[in-house]
Length: 295
Image (cartoon, rainbow, N blue to C red; front, side, top):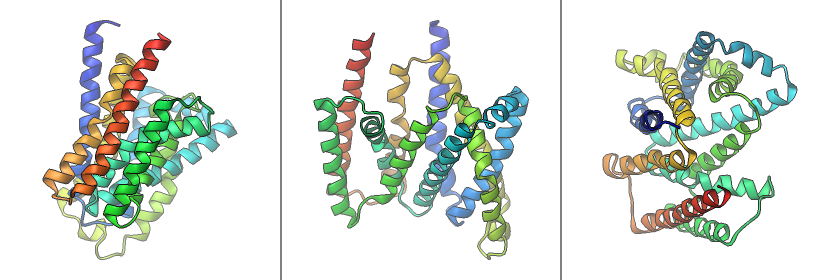
């Protein structure tokens, strides 16, 4: 692969991950609105943007042809549910001052993905894997003690994202096509959410300022932009380079929650995150060794 192509790919990857990181700030500007209503608007506006891009790229026929397959429809249907759970939990957590938990969720998502590999795909379990799972279990126990309850928002984000990623590998569609199918599957319920909230005094329709309306209407574009940049990056950058960059988003959210939004980060929570980070370091080193062995 030419170095210039990989350099441009890395730039696209940084753009995608930084945009995803800044989405936390974006949603914070809309914290006065109901999280479920915001997700309704995000899905509806995303459907418009994504279908327009599909039409422009002449990919709509590919998606329509794929959806004739009952198996593909079933996978996209389940994936859309996982996506809705992930988006809703994330937005709810951000607008209710739980940004640190969103960071934790995306930090532990790779460990959950590894568990799916062991349990569902029957992949071999090495000693390093057992150590990672043990460290993650200790982290969750410590954070449960610290919060006074399990960090369910983080666990829901991690589990839904891991299952979603697993399902995406089961269908032969581009990321744009499959996301479009998933968003279209959610469009009718999303329209229902928007309609139901129309008469609420605190709804977007009744309360949003001009700037807030722009932010709401641009959520679809903010969903599509990082996806397109990530798609461009994945075609140009080696996975061994792209993989570690995924931790930019939870790192950004961790720093935002701690330094910008002043969420509580006591000694127990630092210790819990530390166990997760050690587990991720082992996971990363083990993945590198595995890649070198396979090469």
